Each structure stands twice: as structure tokens, then as C-alpha cells.
Length: 365
Image (cartoon, rainbow, N blue to C red; front, top):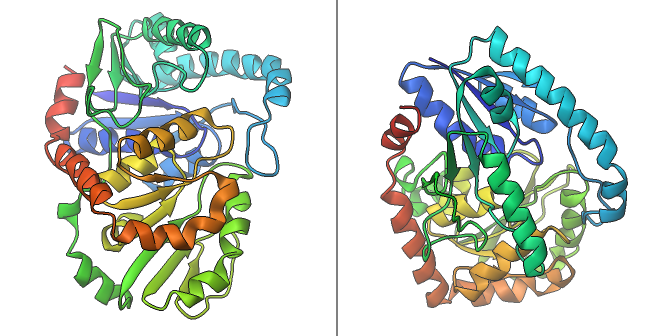
């Protein structure tokens, strides 16, 4: 069977989680093709998949990484035109690649699939808009159900309530199927924390700081993290491995790197993780049962809601980007916080119960 993944290119999370399904499909003997835009194109290609470059549908951001809503709104006609071009392009992809099944991850390939008479599923984790008034949230929910109506199934990659990681993933749509968060690696794939630390030359506590995100977001956060360098150097029992966007010289107990061969190995070794609050990133952290400090991208409603929700439920610390000076003290506090550790381990147990091979077979039947 030939399978096409139509993926949202805003960040790498959508392609990243779709790769979990794609890898299982390959194991089962199916042929997989991707379509997305932006850096996600290179990501899919580096993983060995044929990937079509679609027209970008993107927001406009400010220098601090926050979304500029006015300029994004003014850019709406251009985004609409790109959406129409993508519809035409994806119809051609489905035809030329002789596609039998379409996965549409927060994108629009399932609409082209419906027109071509191809079975499809629509993947998302966001059914409503969090942190807005009920009317705006309800309108967004109606739009999501309308989009999902073009697919044969609505697939929500989160746990069912009350174990959901994200507060806006609760669906009332009759065709909804919950499959749990999609992650590419599990703790069983790695050696113990102590063995990994020995391998990478870490003696003592390890804080892994992942600076990531689209556009200006990582640069804005990197500037604030680097400003804490002197404070980190005073934390003698701690080692810091910080993934940055710009090349920097390591100092003392701080190692800067622009590339990590296997970020999951570093997650597995870490005692505390500091990162953005993107859904896919948070899923990776919780799958390994790690304690974390989440720093949502400013004015990114999804990340702000996710960070706040996990702090409210005791699963993580949530910190606004303007409060990064608190990070050194929060690392020390979080290290001894048994309640956060317990909640993180509860999520880890839920991840370990997942059977991705069985899930994929059920989705494509």
C-alpha cells in the first residue's frame, strides 16, 4: 500500500510524530511519502523519506519569538492562496504516487484525498482553543470538526480524559479515535541514566536545556539562557548540556552544542530538562518520566495552555519567557520535588502501555 503523510510545517512536531506511524508502516511493508513545508521538509528527507515541498502557510513573528497577530491577519490572503495551491499540488501527489491511504497531520491533504476517493484520517491534539473566551473556542471547535468531516476518522494523539496531557484535546466528534501521544523512542531503547552519563562524560547531576522552535523563537530564548551562564557556573554539582542555535564556546560545567545526535538519549540521562512547551517535546519528556521546566513561546496559546495545565496538574514547572532568571533556583527546587516526579512517572506508565504496531494496523484497516 502507498501511504501519503500531509503534515503541517509549523515547527517539526507534526512531522516528528507522523514519523512514528511512518516507521511502523515501513516495517509492515508499506511505501511512505511525505508532503510538508519549511524545515520539516529536510527533516523528513534526512529520515530517508521522499518528501514533497508544499507552499508555506505560516504566521508572522516578533523578535522575541511571539506571534504578531496583526501582521499574520494581514497575511491571510497570501496564506489562503498557498492553501489553494497546496490542494492542487496534493491532488497531483496522490495521483502520481498512486496513493491508497492519507494521513493528514493538522494539514489539508485529507481534503484532496476525499475528492480523489482515497481513505484518510485527520490527526490532531487540539480540538478547541485554550485560554480564550468560550465563543472563540466553540467557533474553533466547529472549524476543526468541519475539517475532520473530510476524513474517515478523527485521530487524537493524546490520552483520554482524565489522563490527557493537553487540556484542549477533548473531542465530542463521533468519529474520534484516541491513540495516545506519538513518540519515536521509549526508555527501553536506552541504557540506564548512570550508564549514559558515564558514556557522555557527566559526573553528577545533569540539566539538559533544549532551545528549539520556529523562526525567532529559539534565538530569543537562547539570549536569555546564555545570560544565566555565570549562575550556572556556580552550581558545582550540576552539569549543563545546552542545545543552542548559534555556535558558542563551552565553559566549566556548561557544554554548548548546536547538534545532538540522539536527543532521546540526552533526555534519558537528564535529571532535569528545560525546554519550550511544544506538545511533541512535552510528550517526549513525559514518556521518559522526566521532571521539567517548560518555557512557552510567548503568545503561542497552545504552549501557554499546555505549560499552565501541566503545572496545575503537578506534572511540570511552567515559566514565562520573561521569568528565565528564576531557572537556576527552579532547577534546584525541582530536583527535590517528589510530587512532580511522581506525576511524571504516572505519565511514563501510560506511555509504556501503548502498542504502536497494533494502533497502526487498526488505523489503516
